[in-house]
Image (cartoon, rainbow, N blue to C red; front, side):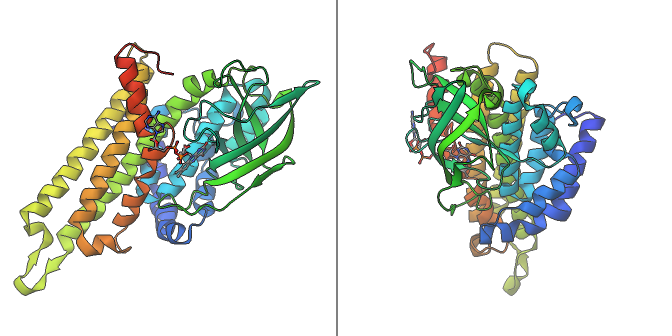
Length: 383
Ligand SMILES: Cc1cc2nc3c(=O)[nH]c(=O)nc-3n(C[C@H](O)[C@H](O)[C@H](O)COP(=O)(O)OP(=O)(O)OC[C@H]3O[C@@H](n4cnc5c(N)ncnc54)[C@H](O)[C@@H]3O)c2cc1C
């Protein structure tokens, strides 16, 4: 469905093999313990995947969004938490790539699997409206000081680099922000609470506090006040399309687990299979159709990004909303089809059901995307 060439297929196949041998076998424990999937990430690092989208001149594989989506889909079929941590890393390095003259050492370290990145955008005061941070930098003599309460940061305390938003010192509007690179060992940064979520339990999306974190201008990833431009033009496409791919991987895992269960689960008293019930076959068919339909939608969004036109931004916005809803629908059908066995932890279907719900409420949330798309279609300003 991702229409990959031979070289791209080889990369996706490598991701599939790592998922099968390392990532998937650890997924249930990562989920039940709420444990950061370090071994799974290390396996991806060893094979160069932390540099998947980083330019070859910095030691990366130089792949685009199409391969990124194919790889994320594969990983999410094995462990959604690992896929989400990996997606946020790829989004972080996308922001670094927008300021390569300052970030080359971090891009090189990331490509070598020695620097994990993430985004620290959401704040308690702006909630899911990441484009309007309430924290505001203080500047003096070319130094910036940031104090900010970040509400959810994937890989909190585990990442080496955090792409932090804060309102520009001279902001005229809430959206006049600047992006900074804050390092995990900078004085003043700490994880300020636990992460214990319904799903994505291994991705450590804990709150973080930045207290008087002092940075030189070499850490600014954007021009002063121009953070939103990088957020929307560079990071949002990677996040939305990548998040859609994670949703599809979760949906695919539910389809496959359901298929396995209804073809093997039997009623011994009359020697029939669950799959002998037409309703069960119908549920499986609906799950397959919805997953295939959502993948085709994502593939057309990737086409639109590779051949930019007037509807490209609309397709980018649609991709996350569409796949998020599909994953919720497919995992709900899977849970019904698999009955009590699905409700228990044995099949992995209830984990997929829980993990699938994250996309709807990760910013830009599905509600907000509907609002943006509706405004765009009615010829209104999106923000
Ligand atoms: C697993 C996970 C990982 C995350 N990782 C990160 C991360 O790495 N970095 C980061 O910065 N953030 C991260 N987040 C935070 C995420 O992006 C959102 O900011 C957060 O989930 C919003 O929660 P909230 O309670 O503040 O939602 P609220 O903003 O309070 O929203 C509550 C409800 O109101 C709806 N709503 C809000 N605005 C509108 C509107 N204009 N129109 C219609 N409905 C609206 C929402 O859709 C939602 O249903 C993560 C969240 C989760 C769950």
